Length: 446
Image 1: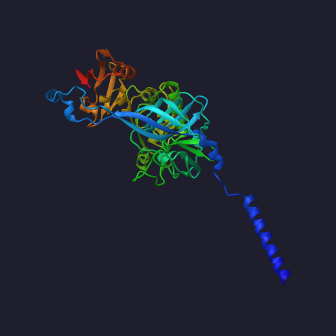
Image 2: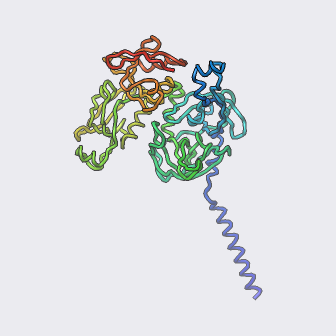
Image 3: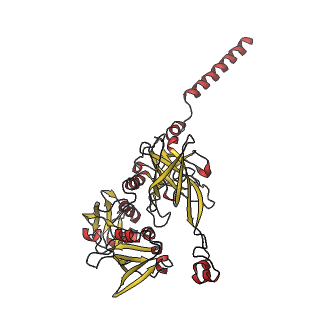
C-alpha cells in the first residue's frame, strides 16, 4: 500500500513539474516588447497660452467709457490658460515632434516632458487646423527615441493596435484594442478627415499621442473621441499616418499647408444617381455637380455630370475620399484624374490651384471669418471673390455678401489670396474696396 501511495505521489509531482515547465515554455502573449520599444518616443506636452477674454458689451461703447472716465482698454482683453496633451517623436535627430493642432492652439510656451522626466522647451514649426496636425521642434536637448511612420493604407479592420499617451495627466498610459473601422469622416465640421476608428481606450490628454501597430510603427495620431461624458466609451479616432506624413512634410518645409483646389462640387453616388446615369450598381466615385469657372477642373476639361473614379490611380469611393485626396496635395501639383462621362472612361490631368477655405478666411482677418474666399478667375478683373458667407458669421456682420470681389485693402490693390494675407497681416482695422455688381464700395473691417 505504501508503495502504491509513493508511486501516486511521484506521478503527481512529475505531472505538476511538467505542467509548470510547459507553461514557462509557452508564455502568454504580451505587448511588453512593443511598449519598451515605442514608449520613449511618446511625450507629454504642457501648454501655457492666452485666449481672448469675454468683454462686457458696455466696454465696447466709447460713450460709456467716456461717461465713467474709463480708459480705452479698461476691460482685460486676454486671459491665461494651461492645458496638456501628448506628442510623438518622429525625428529624434532633427528634434521634431508631431501632435494635434488643437493641443498647441494659442500656445505661448510649450514644455515637453520625456519618459525619463526631463523637461525641454519646444517651438511650433507649423500647425494645420484643417487636419488637426501640428509639428513641434525642441529648442535644446537630446530626444531619446523616435517612431517610424507606417503605411496606414495597409491597415485592415481587425488589426491589433496600441494607444499610448497621457490621459488625465497619467503619463505613458497604455491601452490596446483593434481597428474598428477605416475612412471615417464627418466627425468634425469643415475638416479633412480619413479617421481610423479604434476601441483602444482614448481619453482627454491622449490627444496627439501614438496609435501603434504590433510591429512598433506609428499608424495614427490619436485625435478625437465620441463621448457623452468626456471619457472613453470605446469609440476613438486617430489621424492615419499617411495623412500625418503629408501634412508634416509641408509644415516642416513651408510652415503651413498650401493646399491645392480642383474647383468642383461633388456628390457621393447613390443607387438613384447610378440608375439615372445608367451606371452599374457596383460603380463607386464622386459625381461632379458643379465646376468653378477658371478652376483647375475647368481647365482640365472636367464637366458637371462626370463621375470621378480615381486620383493618381487610387480609387475614389465618394465625395469625402475625393476631398481628402485633393486636400493633401499642394498648389501646382499635376493630378491624374480618372472619370466616367456618359458611362465611358476618360483620363485627364489637372494642375491644382490655390484655395482658401473658411478657416483660412478667419486667419486672414477675424472679421472675414465665415467667408469662403477664392481668387477671381482670369478675365474677371482680378481680386478675391467672396464665394459664400455663413449666416450670422463675423463676415456677414461686417457687411460682406456672396459675390463681392475684394480689389483693394487700404488702397493697396489685391490680385491674389497671398497678397490679401500679406496686406491684412497684423492689421487690427482696415478699409477694403469691394466690387459689388456695378457698384464700388468701401467697407471698414475691425
